[in-house]
Image (tube, rainbow, N blue to C red):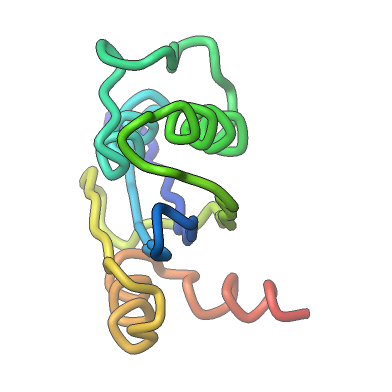
Length: 130
């Protein structure tokens, strides 16, 4: 029997040095740990290198707060104003996956990615508006 997969669509933005970074990511996994590891990797954070114990976390919100804390402590860049939104969604395919669009202003690419990965992307995104 296959494990039940879950997925998250996450957008985030933050200020660094003299610029702004933002991204939309779609991650599908069969465990919170596998999902968390993919999200951390998107930020260039790896469990063995940072003070994030994935096993001690129970939600995407807790993970994103920890990621924000780690990035703020990074002395190589000034990281601030970290904002994110996430929605749990139903994956279309029964495989673990990760995809991202490096700039959430590329609306068409963000929508295409969401629709290719999640069966309920349109309805969940529309609910965010109301």
